[in-house]
Amino acid sequence: MLLTIADVLPQAELEEIRAMLAAMRFEDGRASAGWSAKLVKDNEQAREGAALSLLRERVTKAILENEVFSLAVRPKALTPLIFSRYGQGKHYGTHVDNPIMDGIRTDVSFTLFLADPETYDGGELVIETMAGEEEVKLPAGHLVAYASTTLHRVAPVTRGERLVAVGWAQSYVRDGAKRELLFDLETARRNLFAQSGKTPEFDLLAKTGANLFRMWAEV
Ligand SMILES: O=C(O)CCC(=O)C(=O)O
Ligand SMILES: [Fe+2]
Image (cartoon, rainbow, N blue to C red; front, side, top):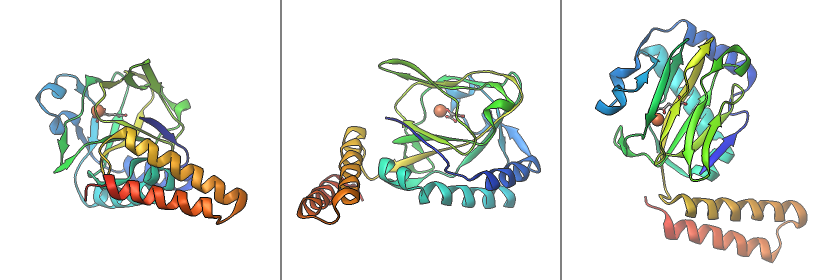
């Protein structure tokens, strides 16, 4: 699974969020890394506090309200978001994410880009897939979601500052291939509705989609 979603946050909100982050205190990201991730993690993260809680609440709401995220990820729970900053030379070497974080199983990892890509060089999120390495660097406000099972890294920033929110989702549907089936079926159902309305075929696809979800959901 590798999915990018555009405009999770609108431009006006991004500016406010960047201003909030600029006023916050950051600490060494190693504080929240496991022993082997500590060896390769070199970034900074916004410190716990009232401002971080507010920001988290706001950005989490935008992510959960995004229809594509909800249909592709089928989130049961999210970890508290981490707001990370990578100044010049900062990076995060190759690692796999912990299987359980903040009490939830991590099925899907995601990064919401907060800085305009023109304002920094490097800082690509590089994900190892069967087809090779995928480099992801998206416009501010866009999000990438990928399987937490992958090895991945953040390339060193060579100019400017990379600012992101990262988080993890436990999905109602653990298996990414099953999630994709549900996503495709739902997309076909919506397209059919747009073309010909609520036909008996639409109803059958609705029934099948709902019942597959019921069959696979872990609640
Ligand atoms: O900053 C990113 O895009 C990903 C960071 C990451 O891999 C992690 O926090 O585990
Ligand atoms: Fe990671």
